[in-house]
Image (cartoon, rainbow, N blue to C red; front, side):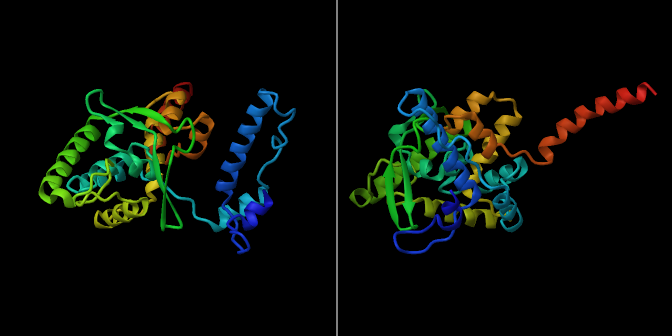
Length: 277
């Protein structure tokens, strides 16, 4: 664990910098989960990682030196959605705001979308190694392979995008690739996560919004659903997590505005107190 914090990005004989506390913490949580299952199946007698934790000193150092990403609030999401409605990648960007990982968005195929039952299936990802090589694989975990209902705005955006791609194929004929993927350019070439992020950041700049990581659209989505009362087990299912603790720890990030309702509720305590004076 200490090696991960100090030199976890090492590759072969090349020296590397340390991984962030969050990355190491999530890896450690996954290791503990795997070993717990091994104990349950009596493959091992003890979870040797159960008492391991990130040193408090390392957490304090990172808090002081590393700015924590802040997801968009509801107002910022509304501004972004309003700005990108006419953009070619409107539908893929809405999928990001539905909480799909960038690799899941570019890995989606039209065969994964059922516009009759209003549902999509997340079962394939396209990631990048070193921003150069595309790696196609299954979802991050078994829980990551999930079916989600399509909200009406997303369904309509997908229908328009599919019609646009059909028209482009008629225009280009054999010069248009038929990859079957949703996130493609005008010639049918599949977009990468890097290209999706680049376009998203350009649109953020045009909309005069602060730049937020595209991945953090997951946190904006999950936080909104949590604030609206969606039960924990459904939150975890939506995000593609096995354990709801992961969802709540890393993706539910309420801000001051999200707490206004609590402030209003507290007002009842204040009024009751005054009434008794």
